[in-house]
Amino acid sequence: MMNIFIYTVIILVLLGSVAAVILYYIAQNFKVYEDPHIDQVTETLPGANCGGCGFAGCRSLAEAIVKSEEATGLYCPVGGDNVMNKVAELLGRTAQTKTPAVAVVRCSGSPEFRPRTSVYDGASSCALIHSMYIGDTGCPYGCLGCGDCVVACHFDAIKMDPVTMLPVVDDALCTACGACVKACPRSIIELRNKAKKDRKIYVSCVNKDKGGIARKYCQVACIGCGKCLKVCEFEAITITDNLAFIDSKQCKLCRKCVEVCPTGAILELNFPPKKTGENMVIQKSISVPTT
Image (cartoon, rainbow, N blue to C red; front, side, top):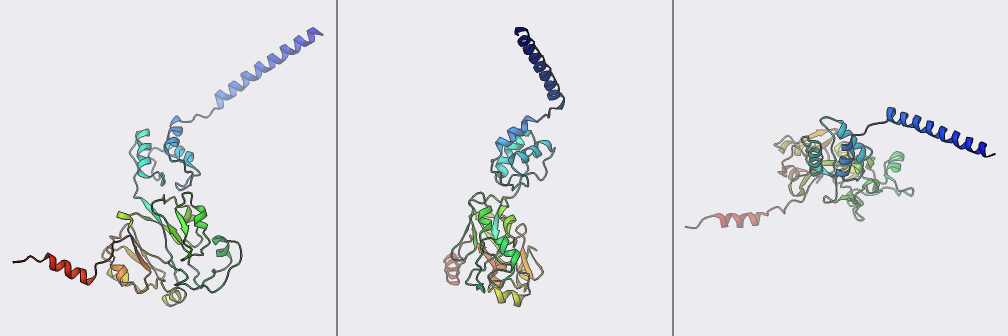
């Protein structure tokens, strides 16, 4: 009886040893080498895993950056130039730089300017409403107001205004990850280059209907009249399908287009108040030297 027990133990030990040798052989011959820089870059990235870079998460971006020789087009919008400089320094490369951007809501169709024509009594989802009908106003392009963009934002940078029933972006919190852009079924949210002091000038409308129809449904709709195009000296404005668009890369923030827009579709944000005629006269009189 004792001999059987001993033989059993010996056989099990031999089988275990053979299995260990086989597993070691497999591990050595089929192991996948991972560059230690991937972990280092992952730790340098902010860890938001928002997908704004176009990858599933920060580690996926880190792998792409390390494996790419030039890392062209690989950029973390949340970390910005500061984080990308650290990554470049870690890998001994030249940093990829980008102009900071911010999300902008291109719709001013509040109830004041875009009256409700129906009542929707269903699931609160812009994507769902967009797939079924034009919404509770006559405009088939405007914001649906259910806040899909708010849900998509990982940084609490966008809220629904209870009065205007439109999304409002907090520039200080926005990381330009683009999640809200993807979430909006009407494509009214756009990433635009940041300017000094967060100043912005843009056409707050995406309606491509002809002027009369667009204005019928929303008082502040762009009617494609072309007045803004005529006064722009920097070729920053184009008009396509009855809709004006201002390129933030070309725009010099001169505000001439704002002054001539007949419907108020062009917004200017974070600018100081314009000088009135009276103020201009006072300043002019002060600047005249006395004899």
